[in-house]
Structures are given as C-alpha cells and as structure tokens.
Amino acid sequence: MSCHRSEDLSQPTTSRFVESIATTVRGRPDSADVEAVVLRAVARRSDSIALPDVLELRSLLNVNGEQADTLKERVTSIISAIEAELAGWDRREVAA
Image (cartoon, rainbow, N blue to C red):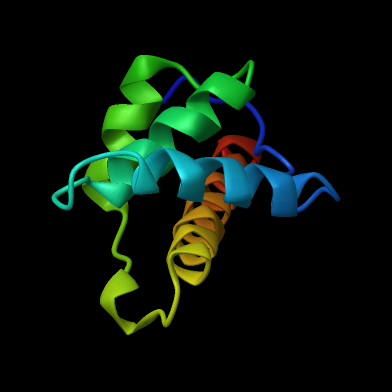
C-alpha cells in the first residue's frame, strides 16, 4: 500500500465532486461501472493514491449501491467507503 495519508474527501467541494462524477456516469452506457468511475476520479484528485492503491481499494470495497435512491447517493456512499478504507490504512501505518 503506497498511500501515506487519507484524502479529505469531505471538503466543501465534495458536492461539486459528487456531481462531476455523477455527470460522468450519466454520460456513459447503462452498464457503467460506478465504483470504477468513482475510484478513478478519487485517484485523479489525490496526489497520494497510486495505481496499486486503486486496485487494492477496488478489491476491498463492499458497497451496496443498489440501495441508494439516486446516483448522487450511490457516488457518495462509494466515496464514504473509500474514506473509511483509507482511514484504516492510516491507522495500520501508524501502528507499524
């Protein structure tokens, strides 16, 4: 894991960030992989998440986005799951 600190994705820009991701997903075919789109956007926004981190996050994410009423809620729940996973990585690095 090459990520050394969790990203603060809950900044005020998050609503714009979520809307941007939702717009990207809407512009893709119906089969768009929302988790992949969100992970790609988070990695692009971050200066500390490398490709191996994205791949590991992808394998660890367990988000039931089907329960979300809207695409924005689904994107937000995926971002929250990413934040939780990154926070766990930070705790493990501190303990090491």
